[in-house]
Length: 226
Image 1 (cartoon, rainbow, N blue to C red):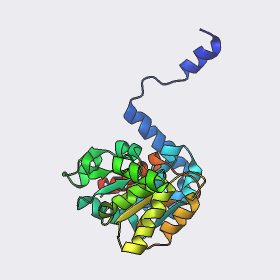
Image 2 (cartoon, rainbow, N blue to C red; image 1 turned 60 degrees about the horizontal axis):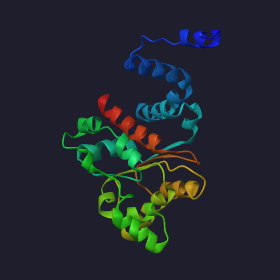
Image 3 (tube, one colour; image 1 turned 120 degrees about the vertical axis):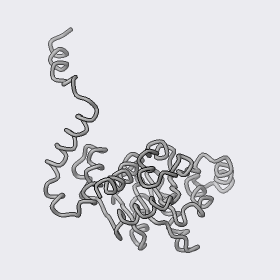
């Protein structure tokens, strides 16, 4: 074993449990977010803290936009067993059934809907020459109306939902709008923010499925703290 490898191995605290690692991570995050913590309500701080934990980027809180009391709206929807729509299977996999059940024991993974891989959606998207994410939200309109929406991948999914809201008067209870990329991303978030729906958005091009999951989990943390 070379000296460099030996030194690096010696720097690892192998005795730490997963819970201890998470606690120490949050301690360090809070240390770096003192100004943010003083400037926002505790429930918004929990969202920012989770996003930093997910991204290892303290600057993410500068792009965090929370509109129309999204935490209260999200908690109320979860307590009433609202359906959840997401644009990526990664979100569906990442959401904790156990955490959802803290708000309503009836929650199951089957309450988390993602239609992007639906064969009918794929066929219709091919026929139209459009993105599956856009066709999927059209098929999911009844789930989205009165549901919780998590978008962590496809900007056209978020834009398409806003278009349905305008055209058909559907009304999600909460939007977590965090698509990522370079095409239609900023515009889709601006569209969402132009509505009066309770929402959490990371403005700009950054986003991702993990961030969307972390945000809903942070909202659930506010229930735990009550």
